Amino acid sequence: MNRRDFLRTSALSAAAFAVSRRWVLPSTQRPNFVLIVIDDLGWNNVGFMGSRFYETPNLDRLAKDSVVFTNAYANAPNCAPTRASLLTGQYTPRHGIYTVGNSARGPSRLRKLIPIPNRTVLPSWEVTIAEALKPAGYVSASIGKWHLGRDPESGPVSQGFDLNVGGYEKGHPVRYFSPYRNPFLKDGPKGEYLTDRLTTEAISFIRKNRDRPFFLYFPTYAVHTPLQAPDDVVAKYRKKPRFHGQANPVHGAMVEIVDRNVGRLMAALDELGLAEKTV
Image (cartoon, rainbow, N blue to C red):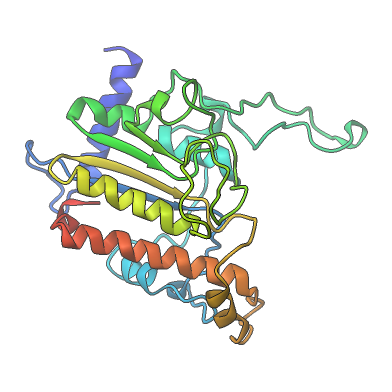
């Protein structure tokens, strides 16, 4: 067995073990997977962690019915390395992405350490979750932020995903309102909000693939800068009292809209009878 086959087998075995409510899955059962990554969301920016400023009823409900880790370690403390680690199961020294962009930061005369060589794209030989699941008949989609390169060389499709909507090398959107100026996302009606649009695309993928096992990787661009949100939701948060330093009305609005769209995803799974078949 070569390394690639080993990683595929290991990923499938780990997935089956992790999702089983009875610890053992029948060999014919292939659950769906939905992995939501909310960019730059603070651990205390949600109701279930005690915030009274941010309104996150859907995330709160999800947390209530799930396992919540209150003490954990990240493979990397910033964006692209974390995504590479999530998708491959590797530490940063394995995939080589240590930071966003150039690792040589600041004036060279002030550096106390030699900057480590840093990759800015995920190497094509790395095995992602999508590639590991493909032999088991899964269809996979990456909808949202990628930040690990661009198709056709190093984007989602080149890494085993069957569909890429909105993902390329950029770590933040040009703007949250259509026209988006995103080469991998068609513009919607003027003023359409990016988080709403990406969720619509995600639900469309789920509907089209309801009768086969799927893996939906849903990394939202929100709540990364630029801070932009619909005026009516921002106005609501302008009236809210400060809570332990939480007071930014635009950020509050962006978090609420992400939560609202997580609710849309959950509702779609319920409607299609897939909730109990999806992790």
